[in-house]
Length: 90
Ligand SMILES: [Zn+2]
Image (cartoon, rainbow, N blue to C red; front, side, top):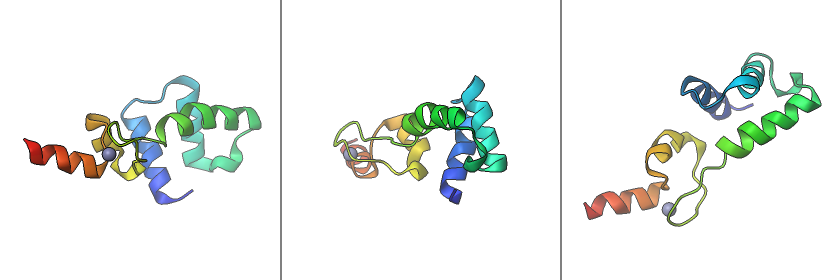
């Protein structure tokens, strides 16, 4: 797991995005790595964490947004390019 992924998982827990089993599994991944998950846990991690929180897309152009920009994306739902364009219009 790279440090960007790790940071993002920590961010999701801190912001309260993950609850119940998804939060528990994510904490386990942070402590012991993804390899420590059973296949059932792995399936939950894929569906409830990775698919939901690791593929942000711009609401205007549909481009993928890097997870490093997730906090900004959460407010604006825009990629960096569209975000700069919008703020210029103000
Ligand atoms: Zn965009």
